[in-house]
Image (cartoon, rainbow, N blue to C red; front, side, top):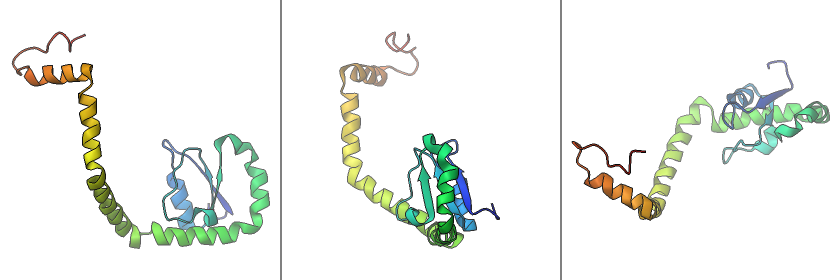
Amino acid sequence: MAEAMFSLCPRGHGSGTIRLYESMKMGRACIILSDESVPNEGVDWESSSIRVPEADVAGVPDLLDGLRHRTKKMGEHARQEWEKWFSEKVRFHHVAKMCVEMQSMRKIYGRLRRYYHLRHILRPSNFRLYMINKEAPLSRSPPDILVR
């Protein structure tokens, strides 16, 4: 990767790949090969990477030939974005900020989430199981309705 102009970043077991962040750290233009990857908010992906649908992987060599003139600039942008968002100096700050944002969203949507769970419990089949479960003492075996 140290001598390459581009770094191919196919998806891993999930929708993303650690290779993307390694490539950014090394200052390489990233070719993201994934249909399902969700870009991190705030990161300027346009300047440092190219997204290629998985079905178009055969066309990557031709695409790279046409982008040779942009590789150095894309690699520089990739490194700048890594420094800004993912480096050791700023990583903790961004994670803490996201946790605070998630906590505030939980307060906003917490009541809605409770209504969703209540609606689920109040469905006739679910409510019957819920009530049977609440009434059954632990010493007895589960009711026939739960054993199938």
